[in-house]
Image (cartoon, rainbow, N blue to C red):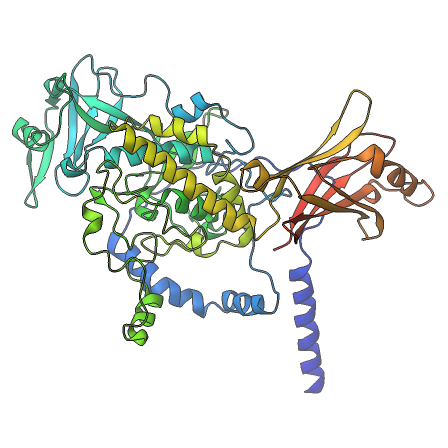
Length: 580
């Protein structure tokens, strides 16, 4: 019996050590592309089960997660310094590679103001109003009323109209958030502000409409009914959101957890994808509270290199972002807690009236916002680190500090000028409302940056450079300073250079986010790499460990593993590790 117990303990220790070993530094090139666009057979169409999805994520998923011993053990272990499960698809630089889900854009490759304003669209991506617009289907009930049209060029668009009481609100939110999410790296439809001429509309033969549970032929009276209450421009046109059909064949939604069994390219559980976890922070910035299964789309699209097809993953329906909740303003509850939040329900019940929420006594103020085109849009009650979708989201719940930092640095990559350029594309008619929209986006952006950059060392974009005099520089960016959150005055970067076996070689401090290698480490490194000591390329791997000292406080460290062959040749970054 004693031997059995000892063996069990030994096995546990071995498994624990293996789990804590972390990633190994290799000399292989950093993975920048996930080849998940391989040709696959036509998959099934996954439909959203509206009631099941909400019930599952609100009640069953939290229980299932708690009963998952692996998840529970990690949460308990965190109290004693253990680590959470990191995203499975990150590369050696702690980034999400390009894939069918995501494309690195504005943070790593800053976009011009014109590119940011355009987003996924080009100049001619709206409906062609010069000829007939043929209606092929319609939706005349619910918050987002509209129809699907085909213009004279053959392009199809989903047309949605704003609530007349909150004119421009839904369409402005849709356009602004579409362009932000595109620049952040996500696949989104080409959404534009359109202006429809009612005289150009006609109904395609055989088009039907659902009326009191039964289908019947659509008539122009149905069209007039939906258009009669909409404001018009001086030339008689009606503002709308025009969403162009994406290339390929839609095949339903994707779930925020698990994988598709009929897609061989889908090899990572969705809740463990960095781009889906980090979307929580980007979503908090733009108040994307309705980011659930229904607002996703899988598209069976052509691989232009092979001619085959694969599934591409989209975020859709951005009309419930910013201050808009589709047809009406966001309620104060939106963004502050889940619609059915078991945590706060329990606190309210046990608090007997002593536990109150800042926003719960606002009454009906949300129905009468100062700017009807913006809805309930504010920054004063926004907490950069505590924000919630309307319903639980498995990927958001799994996000670690590193995932959230990744999202925060993308948020902070949008300059004031970039935000203003994007907001202008929403064509908000009230200049004062447009200015306020920009102001709140900037304030919320900075709250996100301050919250997460104070919890992890926000040094990034590490690289080696060499000048005309053959001097080697190790250069990096301090995102707190780049984002204007702090001044560079009084900030220093304390660094140590170590061999891969943790033997200290040199140390120092710099007042700028750069270190001149030839004046600091190069001699020590070249001496360290004497042939009699090391014979393999793996022996030429070193680590720069940096802590930031700011306002009298020392940050957590960032370790940058790099390969240096010696002789003044420019080193190469291999891996980045962030202390949480």
